Amino acid sequence: MSLFNSSSQYPDGEEPDVEPAASSSSIPNSPKPSSIPRGKFGMFSGIQSILTYAFLFATLFTLFTPDNLFSGQMLTRVFEAWQANPTTMAPLVTEVVNTDMNRIGIVSGHWKNDSGSVCSNGLTEEQVNLRIASLVQSKLTAEGFQVDLLEEFDPRLSQYKAIALVSIHADSCDFLNDAATGYKVAAALDSAYPEKATRLTMCLVDRYGKATGLQYKTNTTIDMTSYHAFGEINTETTAAIIEAGYLNLDQQILTQKPDVIAQGIVDGLLCFIRNENVVPIQTTETIVPTQASP
Image (cartoon, rainbow, N blue to C red):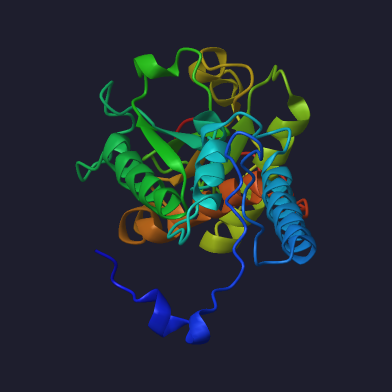
């Protein structure tokens, strides 16, 4: 049964001419034409593709450097570049610091070996040296250095490597004469790098004298220039020994103002390490006997 009446739809009984449907075997199937103009769409799509690839290649080329071509850092950044909303940047690689170039050795004279000079009031050189050396260690540590507090015959002294090493001692408790006051500084008699050893001694002489007000003595002894530790440490380590004062006439400043004494040694080391200017001290040598006068 038809849903439409052909006589009522077309008046006067006329029907439009209708061509018979073509046979499916005579006309091949073809896709319907698109309503969107092909030319405009193709041009827009091509430009968009070019811009997208150009952006990606530019991003990749900025990430590729000789140092990070195949590093984990580079790969992380490439991954983040593809994210819609990257939250963090890959951490930068920090350089590893050579610990030997940040190390300083401080030998506390006679520590754990013997008492050194012994005064009539019971004060020992070992005690005085250790207190000063401990303060030097603390001050240099605060400056950012790795500081080793070493015993007199510390096993670590064998081939010890550091920027510098200073051995701290004090002179005799005996009254020798009125000139037996002040400090002495010496480097190794046969140093592998004499210019460095000379500079370290000059810095210690200048800065220690300015900090303490004590007089510099030039009458160093063979025990100082041939100090045992000089032959034990690595030849790359610049070293010196300081007699911080006499335990007789200088006992007051050595025991009551050890912070001042320690600061003078620290200033001398920093002068050497930081290559600060130093002016040689003009001195007049005074002969001090090695033992008390009769």
